[in-house]
Image (tube, rainbow, N blue to C red; front, top):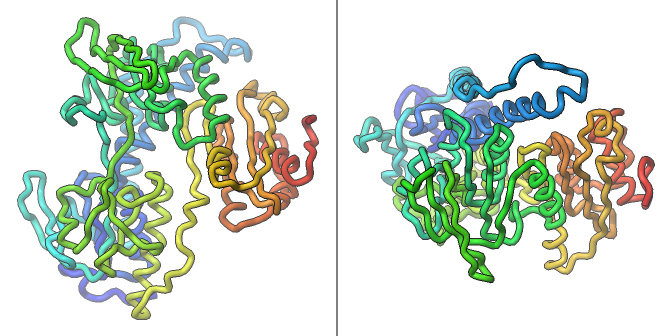
Length: 493
């Protein structure tokens, strides 16, 4: 353990992290635990970044509430649970509970900073030069200046907006980003979702389950762009049964506020050029995110951004042109996921601690991006790790496919939750190349496959692992048995 110097009480630190999101705050805590004098600068006013404040966590709170409401309407009676009177939605109370959950977690991170002796600065971090960060208030006035021997850039990302339209189009009232869609005070009668990726499907699912008529317009020929094509197709059918409708391979060409009944939106099919026009009470723009690197003085660190606005880094997350500056999370290449940013943060903190202690970092065990899981938190969930069939075909990689339907899983049958499957893609030498799941809590079921890929284990090891019975996760074991040994126990084929 390194000894903390008196600098932790002054203006100079061993390590300063700019950005207090999942990557930044985790890096700060880890760095402090390793003995570094550590500071974190965050402009939002609360720690946790987009994920905790207006992303992952509040959306999951609403997904949970909307699922409970949907169950009360459609599942309670058949299970012998009778409710007298009407079942109604109280959106303001739902939002109050969501806010309570979020506030509890943000305060928790603040407490972790205090417990680990991380110095917390509230303000916008501007890089004045390669070692100096100016902390500014909301008006852009300098409040304080601090120095850092090592810097971690963890500035995250922001909403990309609608291509071809000004950012001001999103007013967070009628035309909203995910932030606005998490703060409605009533259920809209109609909502058009522009973008059929993770955010659009999750929030579209929330408001659909609460009673909105939701239509999704997607530029690509399928929903969930990076997902395996077969999984995408199967999941779209499930969502359609739930009431969502879709126009794929289409581009929005006009959006006008103030139309009778809401917002007028027009889209055009990419091939046929056929135009469709509708009016929705709300329009959600969920076309992705872009690095939040503009205006924070990145160039003063000697760093040039790439064409996408990302910070170039090497395999150890060291920036080009400044070997004491690291970048993590959404502002570098790779999946824009909170858990990926957290892994980046831990890795970089360890490298800096080694450098401070030994004069140079070990540069060992970089983050295994091939084993970073993705999850769509709808109901059921969709989760995957590794390659899709399409990626393997394009690479010319030989692979085998094994699938197991939830219909053959005893826990899924007992719960009457049988929509979904587990799909494994394996190599000739029994390595897992990809795992794709549609199931309740698919993100949890996926994790043994993530572990197998992380440590390059044979699929047979997964097949030989004892899974508790009855659990939905047994579907993963059955799929592994088929992949490695050619047969299931609880299915034929």
